[in-house]
Length: 307
Ligand code: KIV
Image (cartoon, rainbow, N blue to C red; front, side):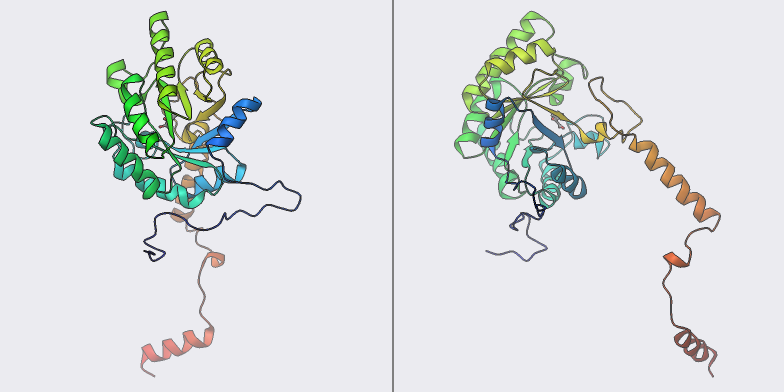
């Protein structure tokens, strides 16, 4: 069935970004490129995006992957953590991202309670990310407890990215957003979880806020690539939350974030300038206004004056 353009959720268009003469042809990044990059010792790059313009910008720069993270609950929707995020929220934002990105691998983050209740529900919900929202893969949090869900999702033909360490959906178990695996026993548990997930079929593993030495050790032992966030240079790739990187908040910024811009202050200055222009009647000027020809205006005035 062909949906009218407005109802269609998944882009079926050919890649929209033309390569310039002399520029290397770009092809869609898949799990194969992830594997190859690890083999070649080339860092994998990933950023989060939650909307169309950000997806366009990230894709144009040439990132390997875009994660539509459930972090959107915090950085876009204003929740205190990721727990309230629903499948509907995720699919809505994934669709916007899939309309903006042509080359990056698109990974949809499975929200809290969309994969924990049963393996069947996990498979069905994972499928929705690909079928209804244009994603190429899904990510889910947790270790060996999630291995069966991973196995069945992969068996259904859906690539799965794992996520260990500071897994935000377990914030209440951790008692806050705090670094993980800092004791030898916790580090050993993380290692066992990583092997269990690899064995279950994940194509890549996010390691968040864990000791750099541990992340490096795990990265060397696994055959699949690891993507670090607050996990040091020894990972096979790096990811950051785009809103953190851009400095879109002046609120809390995790220690492991490097801010590459301070867009919060840029935004505040622009808003204040607009408000000031409006209040002092400096905006709009003629340049920002719609005109009407004199003769049309005079005709109207005559008509209004009844002459
Ligand atoms: O939700 C998210 O953005 C994430 C990244 C921090 C890896 O899980």
